[in-house]
Amino acid sequence: ASSEDNLVKITAPIVGIFYTAPEPGAEPFVKPGQRIDAETTVGIIEVMKVFNTVPAGVSGTVVRRLVENGDFVEFGQAIFLVRPEGA
Image 1 (cartoon, rainbow, N blue to C red):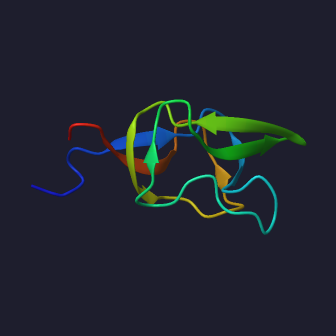
Image 2 (spheres, rainbow, N blue to C red; image 1 turned 120 degrees about the vertical axis):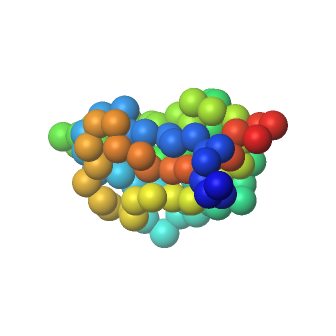
């Protein structure tokens, strides 16, 4: 069994440019190993100069970020892997 079997994907709610931090040079919203809850902002997606926050939607521990800062993301694309609480 893979160590990723019990992981939950956080997916992009919209199409746009994904940013890991609120502004250039700032600390990222979340890092691997960080504990998060469903309301934690994990990034922002820019669409036509409008910045939309991306909530985690799950409580647990961030395992891995799957996209880079500034990457174009599609609706439904996995952007983070999270080990949910109790897994």
